[in-house]
Image (tube, rainbow, N blue to C red):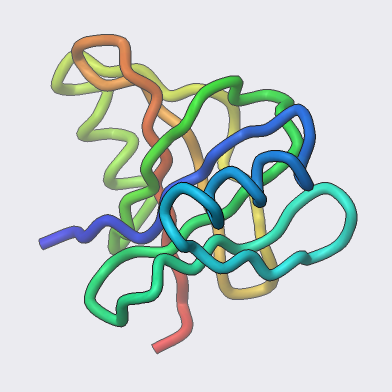
Length: 115
């Protein structure tokens, strides 16, 4: 079974957005440079996510870990969804891609050869 890996929240102002999530929800923020960082929700059982400068994906998304991006994207299109863009590398072991589900919602998929 696939699992929800993390969430992604785009922002126009990282400092303002990180303060918002800290002050409203108590989430910690760990910067990874000027344009993105990790939001830690404070629970080992929950999911964490990233906060990044708004760009390609203009709204929050969830990212699902899968065994194979190629197989997942083939299943997406076979069941009425649509691949959005190409598969992208994060590093030598990790990749991601976006797709639209059957209802037009944008979702991310992630796979990794690290185990």
